[in-house]
Image (tube, rainbow, N blue to C red; front, top):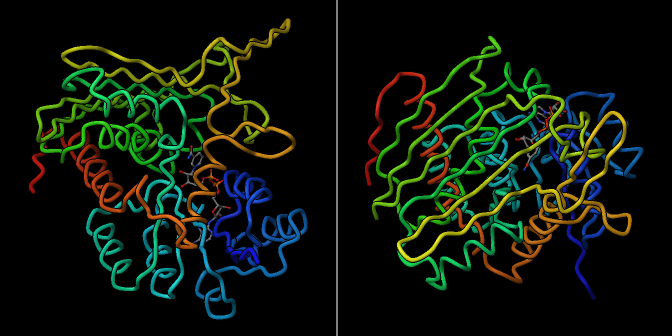
Length: 344
Ligand SMILES: NC(=O)c1ccc[n+]([C@@H]2O[C@H](COP(=O)([O-])OP(=O)(O)OC[C@H]3O[C@@H](n4cnc5c(N)ncnc54)[C@H](O)[C@@H]3O)[C@@H](O)[C@H]2O)c1
């Protein structure tokens, strides 16, 4: 008999709803939802037939028996919610970032080991075929010794008001490429220098440039700007509240070869009198009526890891913790205008 895993969703916002769509094609039962906004909670319970709803995770964990807790709430709440779920003996899938505090991320790693559960961080790019291909090319030595890793990830300016008052962009867009840098560099980061600008005048900066130096001398540049104008080709359409653009380019330079990947490209285009769209098909495309792509792959992976049918080898917790250590250093460097050295 196939085991059906009992899942609790924590945070039923834009992305939480997408997770619920993706769960439809996985061997899980979404048994409960935790969402402080009562209207939102009731709406997803009805749409997805979720029997139980709670306003807090404490209450949910007290009353429900679930195998996997799926944390999709605001970035600043992740660490505390993950620790609660781990202490309750649940496996966890947590959207990026794992935490916004390196010390807390370290505690999560330690408590996860002590409790004998699994925590999978939603570093979605590791489940994108293009990014995986780059990793394979590096592993096969086709580029020789990696020298420079370049990452650029730009987002629609019209999306920024939703994030510019909520969280520093290193925890929103930056963590994707910091994680890829960790994955491709294959060594600990030793030094970070970052510069930021507040073009929009909101609380947090909308442009960020960071230089990361790794222990094996690999240098990575991570750039992110929330300045893509509305006239740019739309790459995300119909899946989140607001359509817009993610323009992400990765380049790997080795001493024997180079490789590059662009997340969205002109292989698919839709033209009308008022708009040009070039929808990207890597992250969460709908195929045969189901959310698929990297999002479904990472949630399916988390279910397998939680079931014990595979190890957490795609995004080991140590590497997720290293990403948090780097992201915190990037924020400190950019805010204080200092070079940050990272110890062993
Ligand atoms: N992997 C990706 O590419 C990707 C894309 C979009 C969002 N995300 C991540 O998904 C997460 C959610 O983003 P979103 O855009 O859906 O945000 P959102 O604001 O639409 O939703 C967050 C929800 O969490 C709820 N919430 C807040 N505190 C909570 C708590 N303590 N317990 C339970 N629920 C709580 C809020 O009420 C809200 O409904 C973020 O971590 C974000 O970084 C990842």
